[in-house]
Image (tube, rainbow, N blue to C red; front, side, top):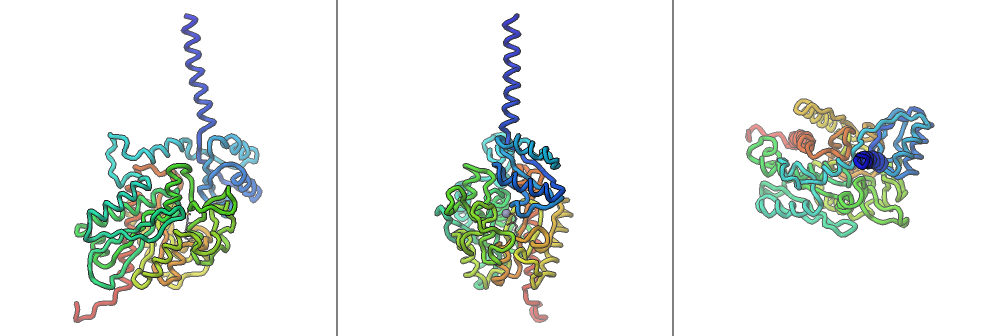
Length: 430
Ligand code: 0X9
Ligand code: ZN
């Protein structure tokens, strides 16, 4: 009997220990709301001194009173960070207590035989995306071609797909890129979703058929392959590319601060350790230079530029690098307004919209602003789901919905661009 008791106590001790150990080593996400400037300053210090990853805003420079901060805190720093917040009476709550489970859900992809999800409702490793690119071009030889746009810092290829449903010369085109920021996994998932939708529903869905009959589409599914690979192997929260700097501890340039649009002014930083590091000079990075070169070479045909990011549910257009209004501000506004209205009607999701600088923050060096100044007058950045519930750890079960919302926006805008750019038919032609 005594042995039994000892056994029982021992078993429970083990349980307790496990819970205690688990609590200490669990990575979590906190939502923090500083209410005074002093609290903002303390929070800025905390995030720069302790091993944490800012989800929102992306850099301490954007923190302000009353604005929510979403902070990923690894298990090792959790106790220290939360006691500091408590000591200074800074309002905070745990929004994701189970980060590790969510990451496992995102990376399990297809290993569970009971899962009924399709390929497009899962997140994929970089190698699987390369295989998919080849397969898609191979299976659709008349309509899909792979284009090698350039290569990354670590010499990985940057492949875009060209969808072309007509041989007519001088066709107009649109460009979509995904995965500029490594940790925004819903973004590459969208590029795959879009290509799949185009190939499956051409001739069955009126909107996509009209679009593809009118223009070619270039799709670059992973603009930052080194960073994306790194989020699968080493650090799920990585944002930048993987270019080393003169400081061996600080790697990576924010590719969306590296374009030549008011480069490295307010909203970007010249420090390699920052998440919004602008790089040594505009287009210093092979990834941004490759995209810029391609757009320069095709600027006469490309009418519409779309860059896909996450999270926060926003449809943005230039400018983000200045508070000035774009020349065709009202046209752009009308387009995103209509897209957001449709998303609300079809999916009951709210998307904010407007010029980037006024809707989120000043952020120079972005691809959308640069493409706009190059002459692509319909230029957008979409921030996909969600609004912070799961953030970058959006469960695979939500991919379909998130992508359909973005697809609605792409289609609405592409159709509007066609309407605005097509010469009105002469009465004789009607
Ligand atoms: O800050 C960014 O680069 C984008 N937000 S994110 O959270 N995905 O990092 C917004 C980009 C808006 N456009 C420009 N800054 N040009
Ligand atoms: Zn982004």
